[in-house]
Image 1 (cartoon, rainbow, N blue to C red):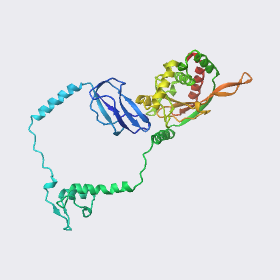
Image 2: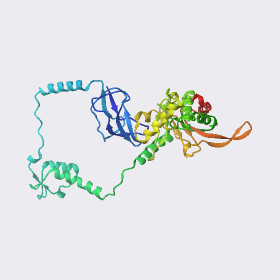
Image 3: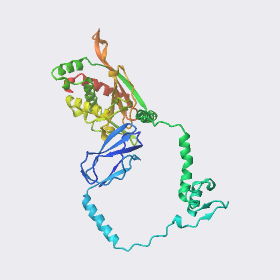
Image 4: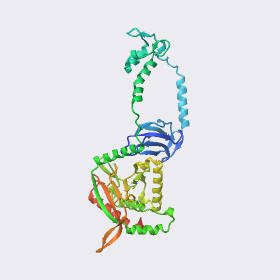
Length: 398
């Protein structure tokens, strides 16, 4: 048995809104099944179960915003029918015990009205107590009933009138757009990163002529739908470079570096309506280029249709941003905590390149590394960029 809670989908997430339950209470669920959707400042996400069992009755109803860690439902190993039988037996036993007489209750209509100090208005005791609690002036209230007595409902109505008047006279402020909310969330995360992480930056130029020639030859053998984009080469080289220099693949937690064995690359994606998400592509170092391309395509389509999974937003062990398609020569990224590195790729373009005493034109690209100085240093970062270049120059091995 375990609790299914509102997950944290990033260092900047404090709460989320349960949008929909996708599984009925009492259904058996397996680990990894998508059972609910939630909405955060960054959009709509599908949430998976982290254990198997029977889904209990929801604790939180759709449309409710709750803090991270709040129990949404309970996943139990006990079949609901067995739980129902146990509850029924308990209810039967309880029914056999004679109930205690209920305590006396306050019935407003049976109370004798008491004249107010002015002698001109009559107020029930319950209404007088409520008015004192709410700070309502009884002299400003008119009785609504034919008996001329001010009752609780009159006090309640009077207490709401100032708020309603204020709402009527105040200008209506439109709710923040999803784009604004996302910008705020990104700003909060990046502000924390700048404040807490001592960044260092390294930059290197890479001759992409060999990998691009190889890729063009390979794509010539494939149909248009099967062709591989250069970014797939970059992601695979990033992952293989992290195998060689694993210190950049992990988290800084509890004042120490926690290196991860799995390589899940958070790939920064711009959304059509504005904003940015960085979902993870899992186990990139083990994927053939064709499967990596399929995973990228699937991730892009689901991110733009609001069908990303919670695990894809939390599992990234390193992040990559590729702004080359937008004509950017180089970028200096900000590390997303608790990760310890971010790799940024610029535009691939022809540049003068010195080779064996001659000046030639080569298709080149600038790559930058942002590293966390608490976890690594410039020497480690330089070793990584060297490994990244080495793998790109051997595209047949990617």
